[in-house]
Length: 158
Length: 186
Ligand SMILES: [Zn+2]
Image (cartoon, rainbow over all chains, first blue to last red; front, side, top):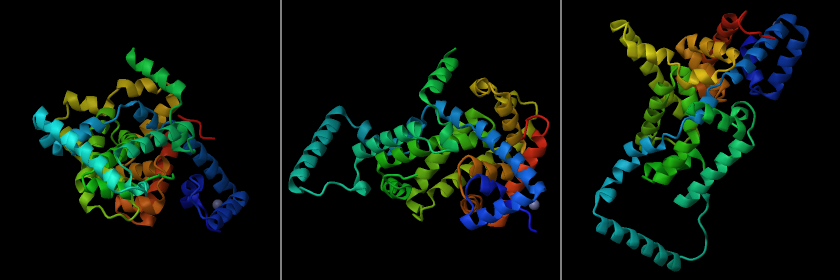
């Protein structure tokens, strides 16, 4: 009888195929050694979940500012480095061009693949609200609820 | 997770220099990358630093990225490689300058992280994770915390499926024996 140790982690993560899972469970039901190992690993699995650094990560502010500076921000320097007058003309020009285009090209709103900046922003807001509110087991269940977050914030302030 | 816009599509738009697309990718993934790196490096400060490096690399490599629906494996491959070269460098530094104060700070950085560990069990578990051999730790983190499947881990770590199986099996065995007695395991 083949033992199941190599499959334990995938069983706990729910990543075995249904047929593999059935065989796994059948074996554990009749092999006390494997049953003990599975029980032990399950506790370890849960303890790992409790020790996850996701909570810490949630309290760190976004690295976007720093990343932007080193990526897209750098490419935008020609624009932001330009004089106020040039920037104003360019900005007004862009808005005007957008208005003209929206009149010339009516109908057929942008699909998800062509969403513009504002839409991407609202997608992010929806996603972040979704992860905090719903969660979906594993990592996600550890994502902070509002209470924990404010508690931790005040802890950092002290 | 049902994303409204797939990561691959955002990468394509990032490659075209669309900042909003790249920003969404960063916001979507930075916490996962940071959590992974905290466990890999044992230092929040260094982890934040490498999270930035990882995302800058994502941006620079976007034009060469192949959209095959494997963004997550690829992202954690980038993060994992950076973490392992940082750990290598740390080992060399330790050897060259073993009483460097700044280094001690990095490896046992108490900081806010320590404060958060009100739960001593979690502290012991973290220490045990940190004590695992690098590749075992990497495979286990990707599986347990990032939910990657074995074939995705194989891609992220440049190894085979049996290789991943063995890494994770050994990691779990190591943790069970390390934590036996310290933490109640069933
Ligand atoms: Zn057995």
